[in-house]
Image (cartoon, rainbow, N blue to C red):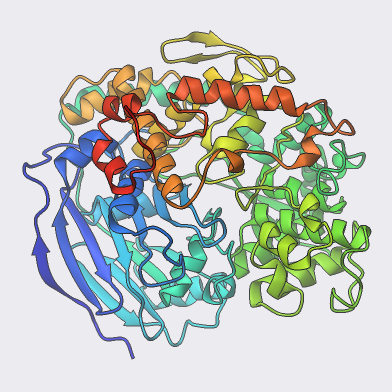
Length: 637
């Protein structure tokens, strides 16, 4: 049985105090020994990496060895806040999560909305590092300055929603916030996720599997400390100005959330349909905003809007089913889940897709990878690679909602064909053989999301070169490929989405900007990409003048350190590639030669060599020489 953990050591790692923007403390929980250690937040690390994704990447690089098993006690699960977290700046309740991914074998990181990040920081922590592995199921309670490891025997074996209900009953105070895993995380499905308070997930790369491997069922946190800022009046004025801008400019997002994009993306012929065999879905109107509104007015559905900490947008749109075959289900609806579990599987019934989302969130699996893996299985069935016998007697035909529901359950629990599919489409394709790898729509093992790389060439480049694999959130190139955006040092930039020219140069800047956003731990959706707002806000917070170019350099450092981590794990140019389907003519022009030229251009813009490795000059410029020496991947004059 788990025993209460006590703080048994205090290790100081920072040489100076961090008076503003930081709480000055990192908590390390060793689940093998059930011991907690408080450390001082490193000043130099904060200056070089800010917090959030940057801090998580640095800790992960420094504290893990190459080729560790992501599900072993040697892996770390890092929850990191940023210098703006828990201030009056909009969208600063987020939390960054970093770990080595059990799905891809490379770096994994997520940025999650809600209130967990602000609560962790108000509990006096800049970051939480979870290491080791408990012998028995447990959960962690962080209540201001006290930390306790409790038995989770009564929670183990429950899915996310029931676990959250039980945790709220045990910790009756309403101001606790929770991170919890479902049965998929407990059984270490490779793309299991962490559920935060029921409506937000650390979805991609398998953070839930890492948490499950450590026998950590949940984390409960609350705090009441204030984060001190240098110039509170200035920061408040800047925050009010940003709030006004956001409320005036993001009307559609406030009204519909992100799911309203599905019709427009379909018009651009950029949706995943039947595992990206097609890019336009004829029945998309059955899943669009008008259909949702119609069902709400008919009393079939109820729409509930929710906001994150200090957010004026309220883009989280939760749908409760009041009538019909899935009455009682409730889930947060957003574009990626809607597209990957709908058109991607040939399904246009709205209630069915909402039910799939509910199941994924409850079991605790990533909706993007789940949709991608099931689509892979369906195409393998279509092409005779998977038989009905292989599929446990199921007919894995497109549009078969009964089969989809059963596959979600089997993947989450590791039953039948789910034992193969739960490792992701790349590993499943190798197990199935018979040419199945051709139908795995993934990059570096991570299933690609719902923006076609044939329709958005810059987005395809980012899928290929991104440090966590096929993912749109590493750099929102689809924004710039649809309308003009202002970028730091470049001014207004607009690009033809079907063209390949100049995409490599622009992608580096957009990636660096997004790394800054993730390291400040703020939301992408209301963010301007020029970093001007955030440089002013950070200056007011820290009491030091911070320019957009300073932030951009930090973002570049984070990107390059992530690349060093992946090089250490064996990643090279051969892995910076898209599935072959996107170089074929049936859904786009996407010639391989043009793509290779984009990658070359990206490498040059990054200051990397032809194999995608940062050059010595770039490493010196970014002060990453010590990190390079630990892996010493090349000999440079």
